[in-house]
Image 1: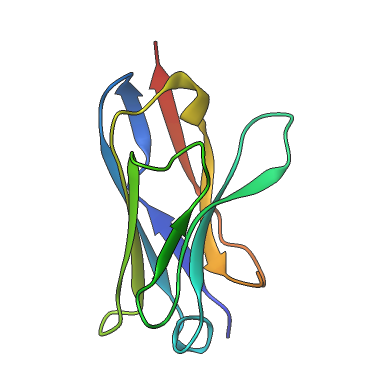
Image 2: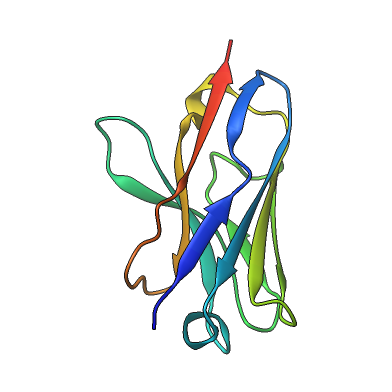
Length: 113
């Protein structure tokens, strides 16, 4: 069974921080590259950050230096620490493997100016 449960979103002022969490089912998480995606209103869903099963990380240019992705293999959980948030980071954030499979409900992040 495919299950992804994102949490940790909210409303924050520009310059603030949030940490997102994603609990994944074992069949998605184990051995796979995991990623965070985001979708702003009226825009496509974009890949934001990803982490391999071995812990190597990569980031979209727009978040590099501000966001940090990590994973806890014992808990089948992936995290996204977001610092120095900007209004353009406002979106629904989703986690999934790479390549993606069925989506969870996502978590809304809203950054006010």
